Image (cartoon, rainbow, N blue to C red; front, side, top):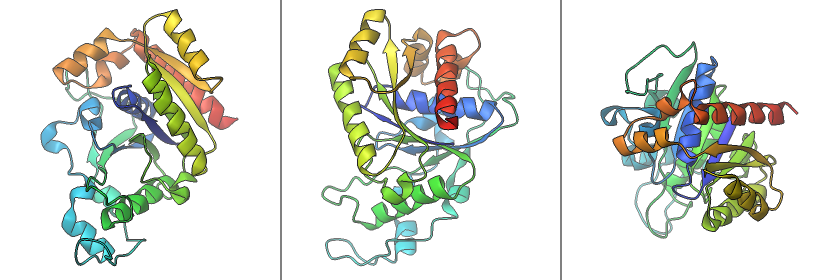
Length: 274
């Protein structure tokens, strides 16, 4: 299963990505959680300690130069558009394990969960036509098309580094929407961009919903978009975020958020099976 999660900053896409990745691992699957957000904090949501968080691939300047053959900086730079990347996942991903709400390791089923941090191109004006962009595009395509593990991508809203080639490997794009019209507008942009690059299954998950009125208002604003589920506003998650703890506490049995994540996961599986 290959899932891409996108949405407005703060809408909860990282929380959803971490929760779905953890759910898949606890079901006995081998999962790669990929942080492709410029404001990446997927590691924190998964409970990976800061000292174990891998450096973003995009910042590995010498590696990028080696793989692309780039010699200098600036316009007119010559470099490979199809660099070798098939070893980067194994070399630079770290074990995300299964952690308790306190951050302590615990048995979490036979599945495996790894974290890989891609980062994004931050140089002004560079866009995707740069060595770093070539490595990111090639690595995304490799993860989505050739890696057998489940992949959950925490994406930025723009989808800049997902081309038509890698898009073929995406089973579902999920836009996360919180109560608010700016979040709805970002989700509509995500849906449009996903369609432009050929992603066929695009869904919405509503997040931080605290009352029925909010749900109905978002459903009206989204004009019939396929909604996989509704995640409630969670005090457990809010406290965890404030304390810098992972999402695990909100995924424990008996929590409303955990039940909602299970429902979203089941809905995804049903849609993909169909």
